[in-house]
Image 1 (cartoon, rainbow, N blue to C red):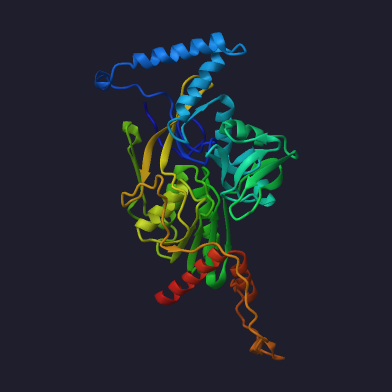
Image 2 (tube, rainbow, N blue to C red):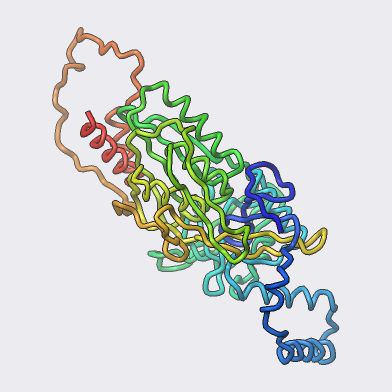
Length: 435
């Protein structure tokens, strides 16, 4: 089997993102692997007793279940159960699920705009995607969904829950969620829409500090980051905040490209698994825009997969200070192996490792500086002091290219996004030290 890491469209093979759960690194392979002759010789004999038991259960259901059962449906359910027992990210893909995977990769799909997984029989929100109906309605990372309209979620297959959340744009759904810190369940009304995700946003902060927000890793996210940076560099940048909070991951090549934007040498990530093609190494090149600017990367519990690759690489290479909260801990690669023209198997085939050899699986990235999100109330410091700008006829500053935030903007940032406020303060200090 020939699996190739690509950053282009969905063809024979592609690092992609999965629908069943949080966005996950995946390889779409052209064909299923054929084991070598030596491997076949060393394989254990078939588990005949277990196969006989499977056949016996199948026949008992066929003959004794209260209603007739279709053979094909029964076997597909058995396949799902077999794969679901492996890990949360392996899955049996029907045609509709494969189409959803393609839509996620392109950045346009229908629904609510949340990434979800299964936890204790309920649907857990990994993260709401920026500027989507779910985020605007107030859905938060960590919410536990217990009902979808009148449908109880407990024990429901994740694909069934995702299907219920889909619908025509403009139609509504009521999510009943349990949220930490709330005494009783919340009912949140969300209006479905076509989700068009702009994966990269940017703006200037105070003291010529650039802010880059990457909400998920799509095929062109690396190019988008470079485009935004080139525009921001016209302001004589002094530092960069890379915001990967609530970024559930996505296309691996985009993570490598973004890492390469800030690194000009060394390893970014490598993967290891049982298949020969699962051994891959990705390094930085000299083609980088900002190899030296002071940098802070923001992460939290909603930062997963490709986000952790970037944060881990920049942390191990001592290129950036990682700030925020420990990340999600999704450190595995899924390979999509075609079974027929319409169906495929998405199977976990490798783990990925940071340059220092750390496996992030179930561990996550620990920030260098832990900063919890907080609601800040600014204290009244009494009457404002009279300043030069308040005097009649005072001279103007004369700085035509001023891009700094006003004092009110900085104060507002502290109240609205305390973690970003702290990242900005840290970068200001680093800029002063480097002068």
